[in-house]
Amino acid sequence: MPYDFLVLALLFLVPGILIAFLRPDVRWLMARAVLLALPFAATEWLFYPEYWTPRFLFGLADRIGFGIEDVLFVAGLGAFSSTAYAVAFRQGVRLREGASRPWRRAALAIVAVLALAGALRGVGVPILYAAVVAMGLGAGGVLLARRDLWAPGVLGALVSMGIYLGLCLSFAALVPGVFERAWRPSLLLPGKFLGVPLDELLYGLGAGLAATVFPAWAFGFGFTPLPRR
Image (cartoon, rainbow, N blue to C red; front, side, top):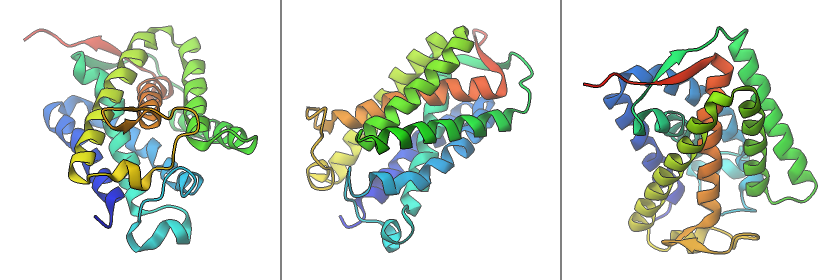
């Protein structure tokens, strides 16, 4: 299939669409998470072709450093990873505290994570691991300030990784052999789980942790159990 990344990106939109339909109460959270995720689409040039070599629509990754697929991918990932905990464990989202200048807080956090990932890459850390470490350290800082987010963060990360795995398995079924063709051999985690590179699952775990705790910290909300039906 010529545009395998497009297939993956479209698959990643599906969970968020289903969540938006089933849980309209978290649509506002999903919308904010998607907006916060969009800047990360522009980091594709750090991954391509060092980490993988998919084909992009209109060859945009070679021209401007990222493609339409990246925008779709990060939007889908942000949508489901930010709400995975709330959906899986029937949690509502409630305002905990009035965060001062929430969008400014969020923007500064994004800049800090990107800068840290860039610094790690600059000293020779492979980009995927640099990204995961940056997300993990940033999330760790949030968890020191918001201890109530420990359980949501850990559980949200695990659920997000499970969804990520399911999407990758669907991708592999639709595009047989894609992980062997388009992915470079891993430098630190050479193994696979059900045919999916462990690097990808690690990334899904880190993204799930960050997407669960960062919006809660930036916008000052917490999680509370939904009333029983």
